[in-house]
Amino acid sequence: MGEKIRLTTAQALVKFLNQQYISVDGVETPFVEGVFHIYGHGNVLGLGEALENNPGRLKSYQGKNEQGMAHAATAFARQNLRQKIFAVSASAGPGSANMVTAAGTAFANNIPVLFLPADTFATRQPDPVLQQLEHEHSTDLTTNEAFKAVSRYWDRIDRPEQLMSALIRAFEVLTNPATTGPATICLPQDVEAMAYDYPVNFFNKRVHYVDRKLPTQRELDGAIAAIKQSKRPVLLVGGGAKYSEAREELVALSEKANIPIVETHAGKSTVEFTHPNNLGGNGILGTSAANKAVMNADLIIGIGTRYTDFTTSSRTLFDFDKTTFLNINVNRGQAYKFDGFQVVADAKAALQSINKNIGDYQSSYGEETASLKQEWENERNRLAATEFNRNDFKPEIADHFNQEILNDYADALKTELTQTEALIRVNDVVDSDAIVISSAGSLPGDMQRIWNANVANTFHLEYGYSCMGYEIAGALGAKLAKPEQESYAVVGDGSFLMLHSEIVTALQYDKKINLLLFDNSGFGCINNLQMDHGNGSTGTEFRNANNEIMNIDYAKIGEGYGLKTYSVNNLKDLTAAVEDAKKQTVSTLIEIKVLPKTMTDGYDGSWWNVGVAEVSEKESVQKAAAERQQILDNARQY
Ligand SMILES: Cc1ncc(C[n+]2csc(CCOP(=O)(O)OP(=O)(O)O)c2C)c(N)n1
Ligand SMILES: O=C1C[C@@H](O)[C@H](O)[C@@H](O)C1=O
Ligand SMILES: [Mg+2]
Image 1 (cartoon, protein in one colour):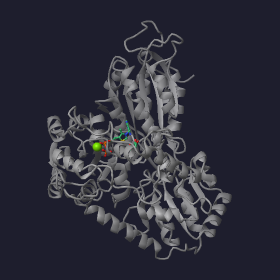
Image 2: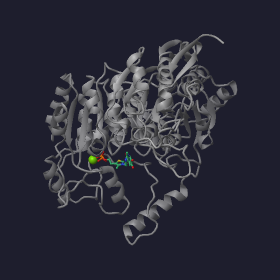
Image 3: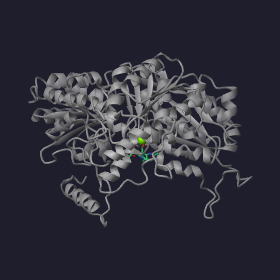
Image 4: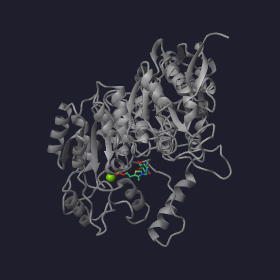
């Protein structure tokens, strides 16, 4: 039966991880970079022992919060275009539960991460162990069942030999572009340490080939016919196009046939914004130019997009009577959306075939794309020059806070900076190849609209789960992936408060990250949401018991951790801080005090379906509910 090697389950796991390779376009690289861990009784003597005594080439990083370290792992895989991953290991019970949110985040964004939550004893001898939940109706249920809803593959290793089939299945999922996402393998602490005679062959080098799936002739003929019938096609670029590295083919098709490019949150920076046909982000957070192009399109060529509500403006952005869809996606289910013509293929390969067969087809746009882009650039210039005044200031989000309240904020935060002018200034000053990471709050909207990503794959917006707390951990993951490039977390005060523990990990391992902390003293975007729909301002501003606006010294907090910090409240100091931060070798934090309501607002086509109360004594809420219903009456249902 072949040679055997006696190992614990955890030792076998580490040995296997060392032997996984991925091959993309003939280039073979190790797939697993290392393991993030926070040890407890559930994993220190099993996986901890294995990593201490025979880690092979795996790197080990000590996380500070399980959610944070798993976000870092997610950002690392994403920045590596899903071609390299981390495993994340946590102790049983609360440590593992802390990773569930991060697994959801990886799932919603289709990012591969190997989750290794420790589990309660398979033998049940000491039950209930510390941190075990005792259910009256089942002993088979542990905290880790919670991962089932947020994993693309889930398994529990109750006997050491189960590890083999579990790992083979997990790595198929992790390396398959159509299904990739988090894979969870639960490790009961006794089984981690149990010995077994594993077949040596199980540890042979394994190469996972990511062959590009080509379109069939039928699919290609259909795609060409759809484009040739169209006068106003738009290339809608999703994350799948970025992961497929389809930039050159997108640019070639766009230039050859004069087709505008618009981008989803995941797709942004597949093609650099400096390309004249790139009109930027579309949808609820879209630029005026991208939304106009999409609203007037007769064909949407959706490449690697899931068509989420933020991309489709809750299925209201397109003119569904005249617009048809050509969906290129490796995932067949995604290609079915909007009854589109389905090309179930790799984005790059499909575009290569289309480029070869499109002939001399030309759209009817002529110079229109250039004028849409110019119109948007003028608008962005206006946003770069918004100026506060104490008498009659009209912020971008108008009619929520009166002048008196805005002046109170200016006094409390000691600032007159607007968010749009600050963000555009940062964009102007950072290196063009700097990677920017954001995720939740009002900043994703500003990023999607006004951040010009002028180098491909530098824009990293987690907007599948929009998970507060991803930003700083994500900046660490991106830095680990691209050590030569600066990494900036673009983070609100609310997100900072929710999770910033991986600052310490970045300092500990000397991985420079930069935090751009936009402090508007509140959950600004949710305040906008409630006030936009007829409600007052409740539960979303950071005010104390005396109703005073809180002014937290985040720079001091950062200083306490050992960051180089700056606190700024005007453009001159902001510019100097960003320039100085670039020169630092240590991680930095720039606290940017900004006025509320000064983020960007939506442009035409940016409607979002949110649940407005259908019964209310407030006329303003009744009005908002009626308006919503009116829009929904004309929205597409599926
Ligand atoms: C983990 C998590 N909890 C709650 C939310 C809902 N939520 C979205 S944005 C937001 C407030 C964000 O505040 P801040 O980071 O200060 O950004 P701002 O909107 O003020 O720019 C909340 C509570 C979320 N997205 N993620
Ligand atoms: O509820 C939300 C509103 C969005 O504006 C925000 O970006 C997102 O983080 C969210 O969760
Ligand atoms: Mg805020």
